[in-house]
Length: 488
Ligand code: FAD
Ligand code: 2HG
Ligand code: ZN
Image (cartoon, rainbow, N blue to C red):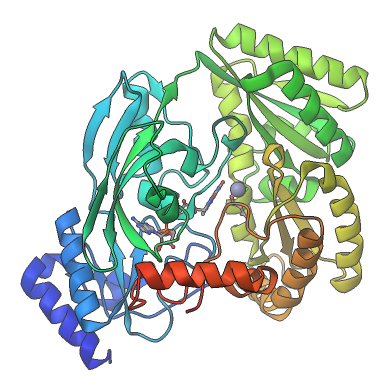
């Protein structure tokens, strides 16, 4: 049973917003209480679905009155357990998915004002219809929402050229923890009028305010986006290829993704049809390069061929496949975008989302692999990600046990036990090394609950103190996503 204050809160929400704004049936709300990976399972008596900014503000005012913790949720694709409630049964999920309006478009200013529940895929389509580009892109774009993208300051596969979500947002509308509405929907590229509140809310994972709408910055649409796959003999070569591609392609290089052998073999195993384009390349580490061209496909293909032939001659690349059409370019992305899905089909992994100076990555990979082979013999290092940004998804998968592997349930159980038993130790080992190299323990996914305590281990007292001061100043009653990011 939820506490008396939670019950009183829900009664008032129903009176003020109407019964259609909340769901309490356990079968209907269960998917909102577990994260995308199935790693964090919480409890809540209800999920609320406000239909406007005013209704969000009403909910927050009632939550403050009754001291009820609210967990903002968009597409629930987050990977750090930040979008689901804890297991107290006294937090309430507030879904922003009903906030769907496209409020304004301004093609000359290259901006679009959207509500928080619009999916990233829809935002991309809207920009496309204007003849422009919203360049943020993630494999989860079909479900992830603009509110969630900004609350996590997500990265994705075009950061190299266009920056993180933060760089693509000019203004915000936010419901504060007291239930007031801050209307900061400015479409300005320059605005130095005091503290940057927008930047404070972006990346705060629903702990400082609830984003209800945003002004997004659009870019000119390239005439063509083309891709190539390059087989690299080592990660040093991949780093060398990055330097060469940046020198020759400059800002036309929009994507540079590493996919190591073990990551690709998961895609081959669980999505064999998608993996067909790489069958002839043998088992190898691959880099996916994307070039955007203002003139067209022929020029983009020409630039890719130029980069790759020089790389081949200097031994950085052993083989390459350049897409010959936009459709084929997409098939290369499909391989990359399915690594996380293939991983979750395989079973739970110990996930890391690390950021490193690119120059340190080759040494990190060699020394880390040695350390992990000694600590976790047989573990598969599913290493892939945004090498162009120095961001790797350095995930550890359970050693294959041939006795249980073909049985999905038993395989998943084995992986779950592997993760639960070794996660903490593996995180410490990987993160200690990353931090000793000047890196980050969360390059793009945020802290949530998964990395909250790890971050507190590495950040000094000054940084932690400032973070707590910000949280208590903006959310003095600790009702917005309590327990996530930083404990107060
Ligand atoms: P949720 O998962 O619902 O929420 C995430 C966080 O934002 C929570 O803290 C939540 O409380 C908060 N929140 C949500 N909406 C609001 C709001 N309106 N106001 C305030 N707080 C809010 N991430 C990357 O950075 N790069 C990737 O390449 C990438 N690829 C992915 C691929 C897959 C297959 C999956 C499953 C996930 C991937 N992610 C990636 C992670 C995830 O998709 C992103 O973090 C995304 O931005 C989350 O959006 P969402 O709407 O699903 O947010
Ligand atoms: C990606 O880049 C996502 O595909 C997911 O950030 C990473 O599965 C992961 O660890
Ligand atoms: Zn990523």
